[in-house]
Length: 274
Image (tube, rainbow, N blue to C red; front, side):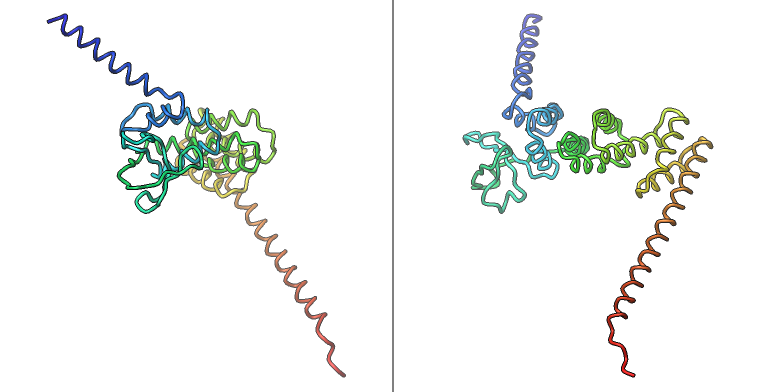
């Protein structure tokens, strides 16, 4: 009896080992395999693989389709494209589906030849993070700026770690400025010490974005340390004063501009006859 049990254990171990070896993510084929199944534990590994091994354009396209429910795989075992990934925003009505990897297409004979790649709430959050992170390493400063801006107000540790890594190598002044803002927002809310929070709040006082107002109010409402609250109140007062100042400048400028237009218009009118 013991011998039979031992043999069964070996068989089970072999089957499981073979399954996971085949499903390990090392190329496009195994990436697709990792996405198949409702609770496949390799989906997170697949996410990491595509970001590290595919171009940002391809990775963003596939991850976005996955997130939005537009990523499918061919489920027909008799098909040459079995388990191949395709993208379609309307699998029931579109005549073709586009390959996840290039511009080739596959004719849709029936929506039943495809099955949607599933995504749960945990994966949605991770996919959003990876999509936004793709822009951080882009060669265009404007794209990096947009990527960092998308993280403003976030306090996720993984996000902050990525932003801190980017800050250490960032050369563009505008991108660096927004990186400092994003990190200061996080520290003002989650800093380890009151000193860390106060230092971050002082940094925030130099910015005029609306997210600064939201953050300061959040600190005032939730912080227990009176020193931190006081720092946030000072920063909030400075923010509001600067907003009033710029609002006044805009009003004066608009008034002057309108007045100038009226003067020019009046000067163009013909003089009344005597």
